[in-house]
Amino acid sequence: MNLFDVTKTNIILNEKKESLSIEEVFDANKYQHFLGVTYSVSPQFLNKYLKNFSSLSLVVGIPEESQLEKANAEINRLSYEKQLVSVLEAEAPKFFRELSFKNQLAFQKNKFQMWAPSIGFSIHSKFYLLWNEDQSEKRVILGSANLSNQAFNNQVQQLEEVLIFDNHPLFALLEKRFKDDISQVITPYFPKKLLKIKPQKMTTSLDKEISEAIILTSKDLNELKEEQIVEKLTDVEGKVALGILPAKIFTDLKELPQEQPLMVDKWQEKLEKTETVYELSKEIISKRTKEPKLVAESTLKKNIRKKITVKITQQVIESDIPKRPQLISAPSQRNVEKELSGLFIQDAIDEKRLLPFGKVASKEEIMTGMKVIQTLLKNYEKYTVNYEVEYGTRIFEAILYTFTAPFIYEMKIKQKPLNLLTIFRNFYFWEEMLVLENLVY
Image (cartoon, rainbow, N blue to C red):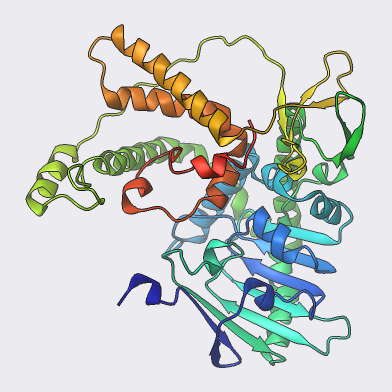
Protein backbone atom coordinates (compact mmCIF):
# COMPACT_ATOMS: atom_id res chain seq x y z
CA MET A 1 0.00 0.00 0.00
CA ASN A 2 1.32 3.44 -0.90
CA LEU A 3 1.96 5.68 2.12
CA PHE A 4 -0.44 8.31 0.85
CA ASP A 5 -3.22 5.74 0.49
CA VAL A 6 -3.35 5.60 4.27
CA THR A 7 -6.00 7.85 5.79
CA LYS A 8 -4.17 9.87 8.44
CA THR A 9 -7.11 11.75 9.95
CA ASN A 10 -10.13 9.46 10.15
CA ILE A 11 -13.27 11.61 10.39
CA ILE A 12 -16.56 9.95 11.34
CA LEU A 13 -19.64 12.19 11.14
CA ASN A 14 -22.80 10.75 12.66
CA GLU A 15 -21.48 7.18 12.26
CA LYS A 16 -20.41 7.66 8.62
CA LYS A 17 -16.89 8.20 7.32
CA GLU A 18 -16.58 11.65 5.75
CA SER A 19 -13.91 13.84 4.20
CA LEU A 20 -14.23 17.23 5.90
CA SER A 21 -11.99 20.28 5.98
CA ILE A 22 -10.97 21.85 9.30
CA GLU A 23 -13.38 24.70 8.56
CA GLU A 24 -16.20 22.19 8.15
CA VAL A 25 -15.34 20.34 11.36
CA PHE A 26 -15.18 23.56 13.40
CA ASP A 27 -17.90 25.37 11.45
CA ALA A 28 -17.99 28.94 12.80
CA ASN A 29 -20.78 29.87 10.37
CA LYS A 30 -23.19 27.26 11.71
CA TYR A 31 -22.04 27.41 15.33
CA GLN A 32 -21.22 30.59 17.24
CA HIS A 33 -19.90 29.19 20.53
CA PHE A 34 -16.96 26.89 21.32
CA LEU A 35 -16.16 24.99 24.53
CA GLY A 36 -13.28 22.54 24.52
CA VAL A 37 -10.72 20.52 26.43
CA THR A 38 -7.54 19.58 24.58
CA TYR A 39 -3.99 18.46 25.19
CA SER A 40 -2.50 21.27 23.12
CA VAL A 41 -3.42 24.13 20.76
CA SER A 42 -1.22 26.21 18.48
CA PRO A 43 -1.76 29.97 18.19
CA GLN A 44 -1.73 29.59 14.40
CA PHE A 45 -4.63 27.12 14.55
CA LEU A 46 -6.60 29.45 16.79
CA ASN A 47 -5.82 32.43 14.54
CA LYS A 48 -7.01 30.64 11.42
CA TYR A 49 -9.88 28.35 12.44
CA LEU A 50 -11.32 29.54 15.76
CA LYS A 51 -11.18 33.33 15.34
CA ASN A 52 -14.78 33.71 14.11
CA PHE A 53 -16.55 32.15 17.09
CA SER A 54 -18.54 34.63 19.17
CA SER A 55 -17.23 33.02 22.36
CA LEU A 56 -14.47 30.53 23.08
CA SER A 57 -13.57 28.73 26.32
CA LEU A 58 -10.69 26.29 26.06
CA VAL A 59 -8.85 24.16 28.63
CA VAL A 60 -5.30 23.29 27.57
CA GLY A 61 -3.62 20.37 29.34
CA ILE A 62 0.00 20.89 30.36
CA PRO A 63 2.24 18.20 28.73
CA GLU A 64 3.27 15.72 31.39
CA GLU A 65 5.13 12.44 31.72
CA SER A 66 3.15 9.21 31.86
CA GLN A 67 0.76 9.19 34.79
CA LEU A 68 0.21 5.42 34.78
CA GLU A 69 0.12 3.99 38.30
CA LYS A 70 1.25 7.28 39.83
CA ALA A 71 -0.03 8.11 43.31
CA ASN A 72 -1.64 11.46 44.07
CA ALA A 73 1.51 12.61 45.88
CA GLU A 74 3.55 12.23 42.70
CA ILE A 75 0.86 13.88 40.59
CA ASN A 76 1.01 16.81 43.02
CA ARG A 77 4.77 17.12 42.63
CA LEU A 78 4.84 16.55 38.87
CA SER A 79 2.05 19.03 38.16
CA TYR A 80 3.81 21.62 40.36
CA GLU A 81 7.05 21.09 38.45
CA LYS A 82 5.49 21.18 34.98
CA GLN A 83 3.28 24.19 35.72
CA LEU A 84 6.07 26.34 37.13
CA VAL A 85 8.56 25.33 34.43
CA SER A 86 5.89 26.41 31.95
CA VAL A 87 5.75 29.80 33.68
CA LEU A 88 9.55 30.20 33.75
CA GLU A 89 9.68 29.42 30.03
CA ALA A 90 7.03 32.13 29.48
CA GLU A 91 4.81 29.75 27.50
CA ALA A 92 1.61 31.75 28.06
CA PRO A 93 3.07 35.16 27.03
CA LYS A 94 4.76 33.55 24.01
CA PHE A 95 1.45 31.97 22.96
CA PHE A 96 -0.31 35.33 23.40
CA ARG A 97 2.36 37.09 21.33
CA GLU A 98 1.74 34.72 18.40
CA LEU A 99 -1.99 35.47 18.33
CA SER A 100 -3.43 37.93 15.84
CA PHE A 101 -4.16 41.37 17.28
CA LYS A 102 -7.89 40.68 16.88
CA ASN A 103 -7.63 37.51 18.97
CA GLN A 104 -5.44 39.22 21.57
CA LEU A 105 -8.20 41.78 22.05
CA ALA A 106 -10.80 38.98 22.23
CA PHE A 107 -8.93 37.52 25.22
CA GLN A 108 -8.51 40.93 26.82
CA LYS A 109 -12.26 41.57 26.50
CA ASN A 110 -13.04 38.11 27.97
CA LYS A 111 -14.76 37.04 24.75
CA PHE A 112 -12.18 34.25 24.51
CA GLN A 113 -10.87 32.37 27.56
CA MET A 114 -8.13 29.78 28.05
CA TRP A 115 -7.52 27.63 31.10
CA ALA A 116 -4.90 25.18 32.39
CA PRO A 117 -5.16 22.42 35.01
CA SER A 118 -4.56 23.62 38.56
CA ILE A 119 -1.46 22.37 40.34
CA GLY A 120 -2.42 19.02 41.85
CA PHE A 121 -4.48 17.89 38.87
CA SER A 122 -3.80 16.28 35.52
CA ILE A 123 -6.42 16.57 32.75
CA HIS A 124 -6.34 13.95 29.99
CA SER A 125 -9.86 14.63 28.72
CA LYS A 126 -10.31 15.73 25.10
CA PHE A 127 -13.59 16.95 23.61
CA TYR A 128 -15.03 19.97 21.82
CA LEU A 129 -18.60 21.31 22.04
CA LEU A 130 -20.05 23.72 19.45
CA TRP A 131 -23.49 25.31 19.46
CA ASN A 132 -25.46 28.17 17.90
CA GLU A 133 -27.22 31.11 19.56
CA ASP A 134 -30.61 29.44 20.17
CA GLN A 135 -28.99 26.02 20.82
CA SER A 136 -31.01 24.43 18.02
CA GLU A 137 -27.76 23.12 16.52
CA LYS A 138 -25.18 21.36 18.70
CA ARG A 139 -22.03 19.42 17.82
CA VAL A 140 -19.81 17.09 19.86
CA ILE A 141 -16.27 16.32 18.63
CA LEU A 142 -14.35 13.49 20.30
CA GLY A 143 -11.15 11.63 19.44
CA SER A 144 -7.40 12.03 19.51
CA ALA A 145 -6.92 15.23 17.48
CA ASN A 146 -5.48 18.28 19.20
CA LEU A 147 -6.09 21.78 17.88
CA SER A 148 -3.16 21.88 15.47
CA ASN A 149 -2.65 21.78 11.72
CA GLN A 150 -0.63 18.60 12.14
CA ALA A 151 -3.62 16.71 13.54
CA PHE A 152 -5.62 17.42 10.35
CA ASN A 153 -2.81 17.25 7.79
CA ASN A 154 -3.08 14.11 5.67
CA GLN A 155 0.58 14.44 4.64
CA VAL A 156 1.82 14.09 8.22
CA GLN A 157 2.61 10.51 9.24
CA GLN A 158 0.40 10.63 12.31
CA LEU A 159 -2.94 8.84 12.62
CA GLU A 160 -5.86 10.60 14.29
CA GLU A 161 -9.49 9.80 15.08
CA VAL A 162 -12.16 12.52 14.90
CA LEU A 163 -15.67 11.43 15.92
CA ILE A 164 -18.43 13.98 15.32
CA PHE A 165 -21.97 13.74 16.69
CA ASP A 166 -24.54 16.38 15.73
CA ASN A 167 -27.52 17.03 18.04
CA HIS A 168 -26.63 14.03 20.17
CA PRO A 169 -27.38 13.36 23.90
CA LEU A 170 -23.61 13.31 24.49
CA PHE A 171 -23.60 17.11 24.28
CA ALA A 172 -25.60 17.57 27.50
CA LEU A 173 -23.53 14.93 29.32
CA LEU A 174 -20.18 16.51 28.39
CA GLU A 175 -21.43 20.02 29.04
CA LYS A 176 -22.43 18.90 32.53
CA ARG A 177 -19.08 17.16 32.95
CA PHE A 178 -17.32 20.44 32.19
CA LYS A 179 -19.48 22.55 34.52
CA ASP A 180 -19.58 20.11 37.44
CA ASP A 181 -16.05 18.72 37.39
CA ILE A 182 -13.50 20.20 34.96
CA SER A 183 -14.34 23.83 35.77
CA GLN A 184 -13.52 23.13 39.43
CA VAL A 185 -9.91 22.06 38.77
CA ILE A 186 -8.65 24.70 36.32
CA THR A 187 -6.94 28.05 36.56
CA PRO A 188 -6.53 30.88 33.98
CA TYR A 189 -3.89 30.12 31.33
CA PHE A 190 -2.87 33.77 30.94
CA PRO A 191 -1.74 35.89 33.93
CA LYS A 192 -4.19 38.68 34.71
CA LYS A 193 -1.63 41.42 34.10
CA LEU A 194 -1.00 40.18 30.56
CA LEU A 195 -4.65 40.75 29.67
CA LYS A 196 -4.42 44.33 30.91
CA ILE A 197 -1.43 45.45 28.82
CA LYS A 198 -2.55 48.27 26.57
CA PRO A 199 -1.83 48.23 22.81
CA GLN A 200 0.89 50.53 21.49
CA LYS A 201 0.91 52.55 18.29
CA MET A 202 3.39 51.29 15.70
CA THR A 203 4.98 54.12 13.70
CA THR A 204 7.44 54.29 10.84
CA SER A 205 10.50 56.50 10.75
CA LEU A 206 8.37 59.02 8.86
CA ASP A 207 5.88 59.16 11.77
CA LYS A 208 3.19 57.44 9.71
CA GLU A 209 0.95 55.27 11.83
CA ILE A 210 0.89 51.57 10.88
CA SER A 211 -1.44 50.03 13.43
CA GLU A 212 -1.70 48.95 17.04
CA ALA A 213 0.02 46.00 18.69
CA ILE A 214 0.51 44.59 22.17
CA ILE A 215 4.25 44.59 22.82
CA LEU A 216 5.93 42.53 25.55
CA THR A 217 9.34 43.67 26.77
CA SER A 218 11.84 41.64 28.83
CA LYS A 219 10.74 43.59 31.89
CA ASP A 220 7.10 42.67 31.17
CA LEU A 221 8.01 38.98 30.88
CA ASN A 222 9.78 38.94 34.24
CA GLU A 223 6.87 40.69 35.95
CA LEU A 224 4.39 38.30 34.31
CA LYS A 225 6.37 35.26 35.50
CA GLU A 226 6.37 36.57 39.07
CA GLU A 227 2.65 37.30 38.99
CA GLN A 228 1.70 33.99 37.37
CA ILE A 229 3.64 31.92 39.93
CA VAL A 230 1.82 33.77 42.71
CA GLU A 231 -1.53 33.23 40.97
CA LYS A 232 -0.95 29.50 40.55
CA LEU A 233 0.12 28.97 44.17
CA THR A 234 -2.73 31.13 45.48
CA ASP A 235 -5.08 29.02 43.35
CA VAL A 236 -3.81 25.89 45.17
CA GLU A 237 -4.44 27.55 48.53
CA GLY A 238 -7.99 28.46 47.46
CA LYS A 239 -8.77 24.93 46.27
CA VAL A 240 -7.47 23.46 49.55
CA ALA A 241 -9.76 25.86 51.45
CA LEU A 242 -12.72 24.69 49.34
CA GLY A 243 -11.85 21.04 49.87
CA ILE A 244 -11.16 20.45 46.15
CA LEU A 245 -7.52 19.63 46.94
CA PRO A 246 -6.33 17.84 50.09
CA ALA A 247 -4.15 19.85 52.50
CA LYS A 248 -1.53 17.10 52.11
CA ILE A 249 -0.46 18.74 48.85
CA PHE A 250 1.62 21.21 50.87
CA THR A 251 3.45 18.31 52.53
CA ASP A 252 4.12 16.76 49.11
CA LEU A 253 5.54 20.04 47.82
CA LYS A 254 7.62 20.53 50.97
CA GLU A 255 9.31 17.17 50.31
CA LEU A 256 10.11 18.06 46.71
CA PRO A 257 13.70 19.33 47.38
CA GLN A 258 14.61 15.91 48.77
CA GLU A 259 13.94 14.42 45.33
CA GLN A 260 16.10 16.93 43.45
CA PRO A 261 19.31 14.78 43.32
CA LEU A 262 17.31 11.83 41.99
CA MET A 263 15.59 13.99 39.36
CA VAL A 264 18.91 15.52 38.25
CA ASP A 265 20.27 12.02 37.68
CA LYS A 266 17.18 11.10 35.64
CA TRP A 267 17.47 14.26 33.51
CA GLN A 268 21.17 13.61 32.94
CA GLU A 269 20.44 10.05 31.87
CA LYS A 270 17.70 11.24 29.52
CA LEU A 271 20.03 13.88 28.06
CA GLU A 272 22.71 11.27 27.40
CA LYS A 273 20.21 9.00 25.64
CA THR A 274 18.88 11.90 23.59
CA GLU A 275 22.38 12.84 22.46
CA THR A 276 23.01 9.22 21.51
CA VAL A 277 19.89 9.27 19.32
CA TYR A 278 21.03 12.43 17.53
CA GLU A 279 24.58 11.11 17.10
CA LEU A 280 23.16 7.91 15.62
CA SER A 281 21.34 9.91 12.96
CA LYS A 282 24.70 10.69 11.34
CA GLU A 283 25.51 7.00 10.97
CA ILE A 284 22.27 5.37 9.78
CA ILE A 285 21.80 7.02 6.37
CA SER A 286 24.03 5.99 3.48
CA LYS A 287 26.20 8.75 2.01
CA ARG A 288 26.91 6.79 -1.16
CA THR A 289 23.42 6.60 -2.63
CA LYS A 290 21.73 9.34 -4.61
CA GLU A 291 18.44 8.91 -2.77
CA PRO A 292 18.62 8.76 1.07
CA LYS A 293 18.30 5.23 2.46
CA LEU A 294 19.53 3.16 5.40
CA VAL A 295 23.03 1.72 5.37
CA ALA A 296 23.46 -2.06 5.16
CA GLU A 297 22.36 -4.00 8.26
CA SER A 298 25.92 -5.06 9.14
CA THR A 299 27.12 -1.45 8.94
CA LEU A 300 24.08 -0.33 10.91
CA LYS A 301 24.91 -2.71 13.78
CA LYS A 302 28.55 -1.60 13.75
CA ASN A 303 27.62 2.08 13.88
CA ILE A 304 25.11 1.53 16.66
CA ARG A 305 27.75 -0.31 18.67
CA LYS A 306 30.11 2.68 18.34
CA LYS A 307 27.50 5.17 19.52
CA ILE A 308 26.03 3.21 22.40
CA THR A 309 28.04 5.38 24.84
CA VAL A 310 28.07 9.15 24.47
CA LYS A 311 30.12 11.92 25.99
CA ILE A 312 28.52 15.03 27.39
CA THR A 313 30.32 18.18 26.33
CA GLN A 314 31.29 20.62 29.06
CA GLN A 315 29.07 23.64 29.43
CA VAL A 316 30.63 26.74 27.94
CA ILE A 317 30.76 29.70 30.30
CA GLU A 318 29.21 32.76 28.67
CA SER A 319 31.44 35.78 28.34
CA ASP A 320 30.26 39.30 28.91
CA ILE A 321 28.41 40.54 25.86
CA PRO A 322 28.09 44.27 25.14
CA LYS A 323 24.53 45.47 25.54
CA ARG A 324 22.74 46.11 22.26
CA PRO A 325 19.40 47.73 21.40
CA GLN A 326 16.53 45.43 22.28
CA LEU A 327 14.84 43.81 19.29
CA ILE A 328 11.10 43.29 19.74
CA SER A 329 9.16 40.78 17.64
CA ALA A 330 5.45 41.29 16.99
CA PRO A 331 4.36 38.42 14.68
CA SER A 332 0.87 39.88 14.31
CA GLN A 333 2.46 42.87 12.51
CA ARG A 334 4.45 40.72 10.07
CA ASN A 335 3.31 41.32 6.47
CA VAL A 336 5.70 40.66 3.57
CA GLU A 337 3.38 42.22 0.97
CA LYS A 338 3.44 45.51 2.89
CA GLU A 339 7.15 45.10 3.66
CA LEU A 340 6.51 44.99 7.40
CA SER A 341 8.98 42.75 9.22
CA GLY A 342 7.09 42.63 12.51
CA LEU A 343 10.40 43.58 14.19
CA PHE A 344 10.85 46.81 16.13
CA ILE A 345 13.53 48.60 18.14
CA GLN A 346 13.07 51.34 20.69
CA ASP A 347 13.70 54.90 19.56
CA ALA A 348 16.96 56.09 21.12
CA ILE A 349 15.34 59.43 22.02
CA ASP A 350 11.80 58.34 22.93
CA GLU A 351 11.72 54.86 24.51
CA LYS A 352 7.93 54.73 24.20
CA ARG A 353 8.23 54.95 20.43
CA LEU A 354 8.94 51.78 18.46
CA LEU A 355 10.59 51.93 15.05
CA PRO A 356 10.30 49.20 12.40
CA PHE A 357 13.46 47.17 11.83
CA GLY A 358 14.52 44.98 8.91
CA LYS A 359 13.67 44.73 5.22
CA VAL A 360 12.38 42.17 2.74
CA ALA A 361 15.16 39.97 1.34
CA SER A 362 15.04 38.41 -2.11
CA LYS A 363 16.24 34.88 -2.79
CA GLU A 364 19.29 36.31 -4.58
CA GLU A 365 20.21 38.44 -1.55
CA ILE A 366 19.90 35.42 0.74
CA MET A 367 22.08 33.30 -1.53
CA THR A 368 24.68 36.07 -1.67
CA GLY A 369 24.71 36.18 2.12
CA MET A 370 25.18 32.39 2.23
CA LYS A 371 28.21 32.67 -0.06
CA VAL A 372 29.74 35.37 2.14
CA ILE A 373 29.41 33.10 5.20
CA GLN A 374 30.87 30.21 3.21
CA THR A 375 33.88 32.35 2.24
CA LEU A 376 34.32 33.30 5.90
CA LEU A 377 34.38 29.62 6.90
CA LYS A 378 36.89 28.75 4.14
CA ASN A 379 39.26 31.38 5.54
CA TYR A 380 38.58 30.15 9.08
CA GLU A 381 39.47 26.61 7.99
CA LYS A 382 43.00 27.66 7.02
CA TYR A 383 43.86 28.72 10.57
CA THR A 384 42.10 25.96 12.54
CA VAL A 385 43.93 22.85 13.73
CA ASN A 386 42.23 19.54 12.87
CA TYR A 387 39.36 21.31 11.14
CA GLU A 388 36.44 19.04 10.18
CA VAL A 389 33.51 19.72 7.87
CA GLU A 390 31.07 18.82 10.66
CA TYR A 391 32.67 21.52 12.82
CA GLY A 392 32.24 24.12 10.09
CA THR A 393 28.64 23.00 9.58
CA ARG A 394 27.88 23.74 13.22
CA ILE A 395 29.29 27.26 12.88
CA PHE A 396 27.29 27.81 9.68
CA GLU A 397 24.09 26.71 11.42
CA ALA A 398 24.78 28.94 14.43
CA ILE A 399 25.19 32.00 12.18
CA LEU A 400 22.01 31.20 10.26
CA TYR A 401 20.11 30.61 13.49
CA THR A 402 21.20 34.04 14.75
CA PHE A 403 19.70 35.83 11.75
CA THR A 404 16.54 33.72 11.47
CA ALA A 405 15.75 33.30 15.18
CA PRO A 406 12.67 35.61 15.18
CA PHE A 407 11.14 33.51 12.41
CA ILE A 408 12.13 29.93 13.35
CA TYR A 409 8.64 29.01 14.58
CA GLU A 410 6.96 30.36 11.45
CA MET A 411 9.50 28.58 9.24
CA LYS A 412 8.64 25.28 10.91
CA ILE A 413 4.91 25.92 10.40
CA LYS A 414 5.36 26.71 6.67
CA GLN A 415 7.88 23.98 6.04
CA LYS A 416 6.79 21.10 3.81
CA PRO A 417 7.22 17.49 4.99
CA LEU A 418 10.88 16.51 4.72
CA ASN A 419 12.57 13.32 3.57
CA LEU A 420 14.19 10.83 5.94
CA LEU A 421 17.64 12.42 5.69
CA THR A 422 16.57 15.89 6.78
CA ILE A 423 14.36 14.66 9.62
CA PHE A 424 17.51 14.02 11.62
CA ARG A 425 18.91 17.54 11.29
CA ASN A 426 18.52 20.11 14.04
CA PHE A 427 18.12 22.93 11.50
CA TYR A 428 16.94 22.61 7.92
CA PHE A 429 18.15 25.86 6.42
CA TRP A 430 18.98 24.59 2.94
CA GLU A 431 15.59 22.88 2.77
CA GLU A 432 13.97 26.12 3.92
CA MET A 433 15.42 28.50 1.34
CA LEU A 434 12.06 28.85 -0.36
CA VAL A 435 10.49 29.61 3.02
CA LEU A 436 13.15 32.19 3.81
CA GLU A 437 12.45 33.85 0.49
CA ASN A 438 9.07 34.91 1.86
CA LEU A 439 10.39 36.12 5.20
CA VAL A 440 12.38 39.19 6.24
CA TYR A 441 15.59 39.65 8.18
